[in-house]
Image (cartoon, rainbow, N blue to C red):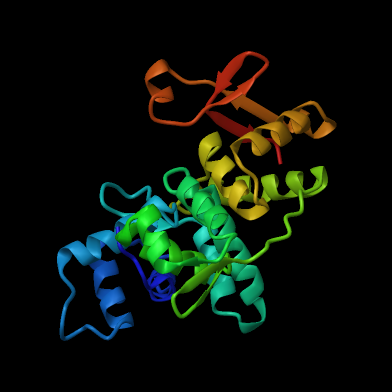
Length: 259
């Protein structure tokens, strides 16, 4: 999928704030953002951009029903940083974490950045990853500060990665759980949240892969804060749709917290 304008795509996304989004409304806002109101983009172009935002989990299904989406908690944080000139470093860091942690495309971004640790020509990159995926990888990785692009050359930017402390992990987990509890109905909150979604959101914010998140959560469960966490299983068919977390030989897909 070709999405070479991440900044405009994200700016269009951020226009919705707390409002619900569907394909048609996003298409209209995106066309205004790129100056194509009187020259509408084709449906395939809109499909690609809208689907990319769902694939990166910046748009998630809303409670309201089929075809309606809302900005994820990560998307809202990203939007807050995007519009603040003083927070561009944090914006790039959060976007970089999101790209690397993504379940569907994270492996491609990690492989691409690893490949670009040695300066590469775009021709070499196109040969390695094919033309359309390469153009998308380069555009989003450059927007996230993972690579530098100069004329025909691309090179990875060295990133210093710091592992979060257990205190930071706990505080971020609590904040994210509370955020994920919210629904579109006033006064109604979710008690259980999917562990897979929680894993992804924390992975983005703290730059943790799946194994690192699971290890941190297991350490937390063995600590005094662990008494505030309850894990839940689900019927077998649910495991086919949701990611699971393994603890003491049992599999869980939901989590609640007494916070």
